[in-house]
View 1 (tube, rainbow, N blue to C red):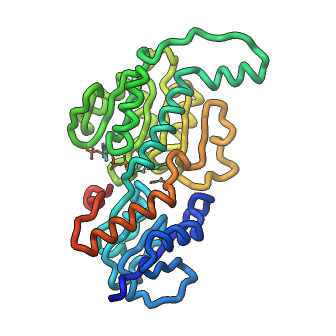
View 2: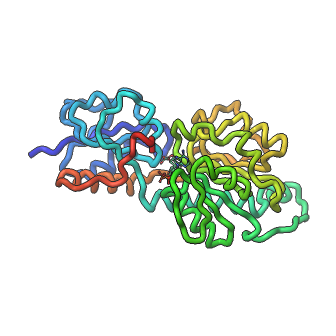
View 3: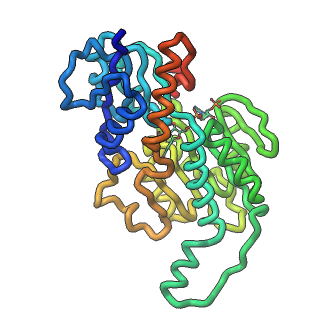
Length: 321
Ligand code: NDP
Ligand code: OXD
């Protein structure tokens, strides 16, 4: 019997989202299945049972009448949730250790960068200035992670091992050894009050849009050795009010920011973030989805699903993540 075809719709536009690379990988891991790379492949849309996608255009997936599962090739599904023609089939997201470890690398790198005063030290090097400032230990710093899910929890454990005091905030109540857990809007202020370095790993949903704003930054701890609180956002650009971040950096409400994601990506050349002295900017590559790892993950799930098995990491469409 012919197996249902897999359609690939990949619109990232950067090297790690090269559609041809993904197509070559899926051809390897699905050798007995037709893999069609859109938009150029010619095929009957009715043969498509599975779609693997990154930022498909709204309406693109509605063309497949016999679709059974959509695999989002990243962890965040906000782009798909914005498509009101999205077929009512299970939507699977990426939650695998490869991606989780990559994100923990990013979080640890950026927490340490601010904690160890790297912006000041690089500036000193350029100025040939031998003038170290007092350095405090990790235990003097409280890191607060917004989003205690797959990515946030792993980063929290590693930061704890390094010696930071770590807290996390999510929607539902959790207990995690060594991490102070807060939940819901009623506990948000208490979480912020004790936070020196705020790390955001929330999904973008109607509840979280623009949550990183002046009102929130003003509630962070102002009495840490850092002098002023720092924000690190690797969740989504839509979580942040960018005008507020810039104004808060300029008036001292924030002491620094590491930003991997932006409201508009690619970030326009005219954005003040590119040249701001207290911003460390990366081009949405905190945690790349690896084509080798994730094509395997999708192929294994398809094989199991066709044998009647359950899918892993299915998105709850009501919650939006
Ligand atoms: P998860 O779904 O595992 O975790 C999401 C966390 O956010 C959960 O703890 C959840 O709470 C919490 N949350 C959701 N909504 C709210 C809310 N309204 N209030 C409080 N907490 C809330 O996601 P992942 O950890 O896998 O990924 C998180 C995000 O990281 C992705 O959605 C994506 O946007 C981003 N990402 C960015 C990448 C990059 O390269 N920059 C790469 C990969 C992901 P609860 O535990 O109660 O459900
Ligand atoms: C993701 C991402 O969601 O790359 O995985 O941002």
